[in-house]
Image 1 (tube, rainbow, N blue to C red):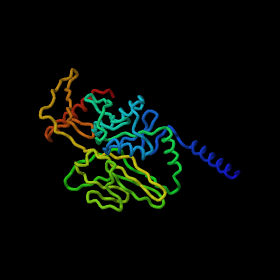
Image 2: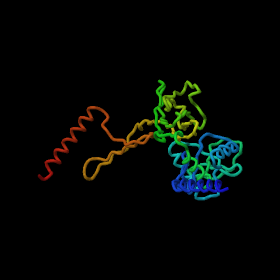
Image 3: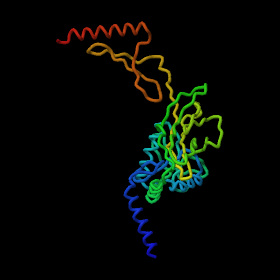
Image 4: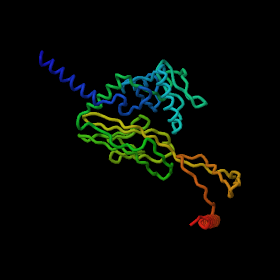
Length: 305
């Protein structure tokens, strides 16, 4: 009996030490903070029944929309995703046949849908489930797989027809050496035991064709060995583009102090970059440069020595 009590005391000491190491204000790997909870937005569409299963498998449940602060934070996350190129308008949430739907004014409201309809969905973790996952991640044994490099959360690419590839990084560590698998929109596309003519695996990195069909696709990798499995944050592929300038420029306004104001009506483009006005041909450029140098010399002469 005394050995059993000693064993329990040892377990309590270990648990207390782990609790001191765990930051319960953070979220487990793969989850993000919303209000005082952790959520995961799953892009791969599913029915309500399957969405519940996925959330339960992850240690959570479909998001409870009755928690107002949580709902507001998740709406802000969805708005940010929409601005960054994820145009899915509807997401399964908790409740029978409930979903968050984007309205014409850019906000979100709760609507009723057919439970068999397939939509992306939002999982959330309770405080106990969150603590449990944090404990599990702290208890990963030495040699358990770790993902040390995944790159940025968004990658822009220019769609091409000549089979250029985009490299998606996934640098892993572990002993035994982890097996890397890749998923597109939460559906497995490539692992060492699979062959796929559309994708190439180079070490842990995935090479995907720069095809317009992959625009706004989400990719993530997993690393697995006999000691566990981890999942990377998602990487969203977004096409880069620039529309043509308008055929007629905006009006030119003279300034009271001399010179003129030239506004640049930039066309739609992605990603956003700074635009500069430059002369349109070499003759105009020479004239522009000459005028600039003359003005600079005149300014230098007027400047007191």
